[in-house]
Amino acid sequence: MDPYKLLRVSLNPDGSLTRSDLIPLLPPSDPAVLCQDLPLNPARGTTFRLFLPRQPPPAPKLPLILYFHGGGFILFRAASGPIHAACARLAASLPAIVLSVDYRLAPEHRLPAAYDDALDVLLWLRSQAVDGRGDLPFRYCADFSRCFLMGTSAGGNIAFYAAVRAAALTDSLHPVKIAGLVLDQPYFGGVERTESEERAKEDKIIPLVANDLMWELALPEGANRDHEYCNPMANEAKLLAAVGNLPRCLVRGHIGDPLYDRQREFAGMLERRGVSVVARMESEGLHGMEMFDASKEEELVADVRRFLYFEDGGGSAGVGLQRL
Image 1 (cartoon, helix red, strand yellow):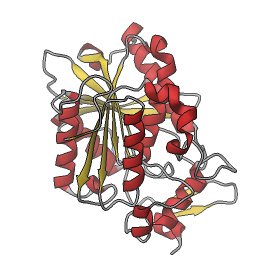
Image 2 (cartoon, one colour):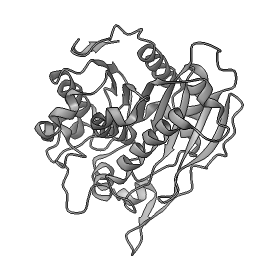
Image 3 (spheres, helix red, strand yellow):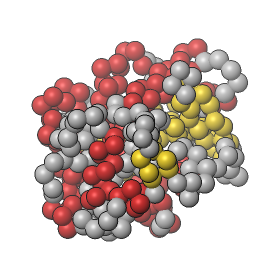
Image 4 (cartoon, one colour):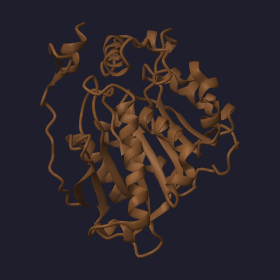
């Protein structure tokens, strides 16, 4: 199996990728929500897409979700059709204000570039909370003390490492407060294969050859899959202080996902370090299934709603691993 053909990409002589345009990019428009593309860091050419419910409730103010899409760090954009649709439904259904970050992709911008972009959006959010300029109506209905970092697959990895970095900047981010992490099938790896990876090595969504290629293109040059960006469990001691300061976390996974064992191991690491973890790990399904199965998307939205509004039984740090 040729992973380049599977992922519909080709490697250019300069090290960049040519990506398929099979999935269309959508304009910032949606009948369910107000939508707008905004600049993030002009020096890096980054942007984000803002989703705001058309009729936000007058009170209380809405939580903020900073959303990071999946794609193995190398694929998709905030404007990609399925990602745009997922964020619009989150904003309308929860309801919440969603900022979908169009972070820089590898291999043109290897990790930690995406983590840098995630931190940029947190700092931008703080600037809006403190002395926002321009006519951005979300400021008047946003609860900056209820900011959630959310990501699917590689986006879950980005959300985690953004929170690790932000743990050292709590005072600098005030009045923005990260109230929780929503890590949907977070993308982690390692040199040694897990049982779920071996069992699903020819998975239709993320076979091992594709998994290996995405890490090869995303990690710093010369790094292997036990690098901290890929395998936080193998670098637990290094991450210890930051992990212990994380807010409550929702970790979701599907039993049929090749990455399932790593997601369970990751949730266990957080629990050991005193993080309040709500684990939703018993669902049947495949990696990224929410993008093409409406019932799985409904499960995701319901899980996120319960987590955002404390309907899951979670609370203060250290309450232990839970099942929704």
